[in-house]
Structures are given as C-alpha cells and as structure tokens.
Image 1 (cartoon, rainbow, N blue to C red):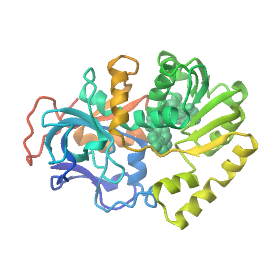
Image 2 (cartoon, protein in one colour):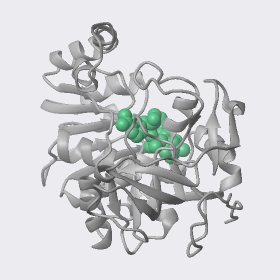
Image 3 (cartoon, helix red, strand yellow):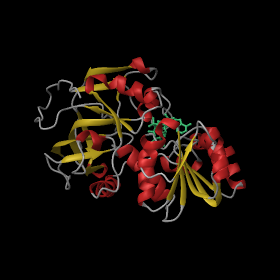
Image 4 (cartoon, helix red, strand yellow):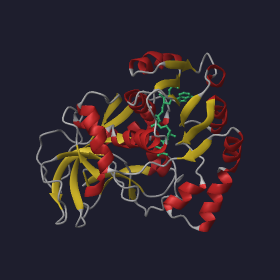
Amino acid sequence: MKAFVVDRYGSADRVRASDVRDPEIREDDVLVQVHATGVNPLDSKIRDGEFKLILPYRLPLILGNELAGVVVRVGPLVRRFKPGDEVYARPDKNRIGTFAELIAVSEEDLAIKPRNLTMEEAASIPLVGLTAWQALVEKARLQKGQKVLIHAGSGGVGTFAIQLAKHLGATVATTTSTANVDLVKRLGADIVIDYKKESFEEVLRDCDVVLNSLDADTLTKSLRVLKPGGRLISISGPPDPEFARDLGANRMLELVMRFLSFRIRRQAKRHLVNYSFLFMRASGDQLRQIGSLIEAGALRPVLDRVFPFESTQDAMAYVDTGRAKGKVVVKVRERGRLSRGREPVAPQRR
Ligand SMILES: NC(=O)c1ccc[n+]([C@@H]2O[C@H](COP(=O)([O-])OP(=O)(O)OC[C@H]3O[C@@H](n4cnc5c(N)ncnc54)[C@H](OP(=O)(O)O)[C@@H]3O)[C@@H](O)[C@H]2O)c1
C-alpha cells in the first residue's frame, strides 16, 4: 500500500511517499481502508523527533494520527464492527499511521462515523474532539454557568473546544487574531479577545478553567485570569509528574517532567489554582458520545483545506504555518470505490 513515512527524525523533506506492506491485524483489530486523514501539529512534532522520549517509535514510521474510512476485515474477537462499516478513529498513540491506504486499529479505539458527515469532515474530528472532551469534560468537569478561556479559538482544537464548552453551558472566552474574530463568534464564543489589539490577561477575570495550547508566556499569564480553585489545563506543555505516571515513565523521565513543570506548578500553587498537562488518548467510547452530539447538530466540524493524498507533505507544511482555521485534511480515497487489497490507489484530487 502507499503511505507517507519518516525514516529518520528531522525536517519536512524527511517525509516521503513509499510502498509499504499492508498492516497485519491482531485478534481484536479492525482493518480500515482510510478514506481521509486529519493533519495535526502533532504529526510534524513526531516527524521532528520532539516526542522521541515519550513515544519511542521504531523507524521507518508511517505518520498520521486520525482517520475516517471503511472497515475491510475484522479480527476474530471483534464484536462491534463488520466489513463495510464507515468508521472514524484516533488510533492508539503507539500504533499511529493514518497517512496510508490501510491501517489496523484496535476495536476499542474505533467508532461508527457520524452519519451526517463526509469522510473528510469525519477525519477532522477524532484528535481535536477527544482532546477537547478529555480537557473540558473529563479533567475540568466543566459545568453550566462556569467561565472558560480557550486559547487559539480559531485552531483545530479551539474550534471544537469552543463548541463543546458552549454545549456544556459555559460562558466561553477565546483569543484569536482580527481575521478570525467572526469565525469564533459564529462558533459561539461569548467573549472574543483579539490578541492583535488587547491582552487577554488585562481583560479577563474569574475564569474557572483555562485551556492553553500556546507558549509558556501565555501559560503563565493565564494564571492571572483564573479564580482561586480554578484549573489551568495545558496541551502544549510542560508535562507534569502525573502525566509521567500515566505514561508509565521511568524514574528519570518522571524527574525530567517534574523539573520542566516545576515553575508553573509552583506559580499555580501561589495563585491557588490547579495546573495539569494533558496528552490526549484514543477512545472509541468518547468518539461515540462526540458522534451523537454531531448527529444531533450540537457540534460541527470546521475544515480549512482538503489536500489530495499525494500532497500530504504540503498539507503538513500548511499546518506548520500555524495559521490554519479549523482543520486540515488529506483525502486518501474516493468514496464508493471497493477495497482492492494490495493494489495501490491513485491519489485523488479534491
Ligand atoms: N497534548 C495534546 O493532547 C494535544 C492535542 C492536540 C493539540 N495539541 C497541541 O495544541 C496546539 C494547538 O493545536 P491545534 O491543532 O489547535 O493547532 P492549529 O490548528 O495549527 O492552530 C492554529 C491556530 O492557532 C491560532 N494562534 C496562533 N497563535 C495564536 C495566539 N498567540 N493567540 C491566539 N491564537 C493563536 C491561529 O490563529 P491566528 O491565525 O488568528 O493567530 C490558528 O488559527 C499544538 O501545539 C498541538 O500540538 C496537543
């Protein structure tokens, strides 16, 4: 099958199209023919080796962290899926590789694709949808009437998190640039801070939750807008000791994470707020819940651009600009075509 792989960690030109062997499936795996795959900053970080310590992949590695597609075959222990089902998923972090024509995904990580979405729309959801869910529902337990600040509201995570927070009944503040003010308002943001014109830490007060996806400076400033007892959740680091424990990291790695997050944890304590790092995880169950909300019209995908499969490197370069509005997706295959097993699939244009 065709796939986009990285042989050695490094720059963008290290990613190349390659013919690789079809994946083998385990007893509880589902073989999925990928129709579309979302592109995320995580793909470039993995390509660049930034996650080497946390995710020790064997190279060459097929990149790609989310997909929508059609079930081709299932392992003998699989109960919930059958060939022909339309599905979507964020595969487990240790078994990525959605920039490919086929992927084996554990049944646990898969869900039926929301019926009202195209393959491209569905492929844009899993990584950011699960991130927003695990930050706002699981960690923050965001309640009706609470106030949440979602940084970078126009990005992949932001566009989804704003909608989810609104659905949960929160008052939503967000940061974005002038060009994207209307977009985040349309998604439901109540308070929009145009970072080109004003500083969020001077405008906002008494937030219950902040979801940070930006730099260390933004993280520190975010402490000032939280009320005592509030929660600062960061998905852009620094990792904390609890994350090291969840990861099953060795003592050395735990110490590194303790050191990296020491300053922000100490500052958070002084402000009487809780700091935690989140690294999202795969979950078919949560994707089912997200899918129901999408089918009910409470949440919708926000797509910026769709690239053809052969332009996967261009799609990654576009995400690397840091200016995407919502999600960037690669279309791997046209709908309705039958699986042809090992036969390479011609790249499809938008
Ligand atoms: N830990 C995890 O589990 C996890 C999961 C998902 C993502 N992440 C991380 O979270 C970060 C965001 O991911 P993403 O997918 O949302 O990225 P993205 O879609 O590439 O973000 C692009 C958006 O960021 C906005 N932005 C850039 N600088 C900004 C600033 N100073 N203030 C406000 N908005 C700003 C841009 O809007 P403007 O053009 O208007 O500036 C653009 O719309 C990445 O670092 C990613 O790796 C982590």
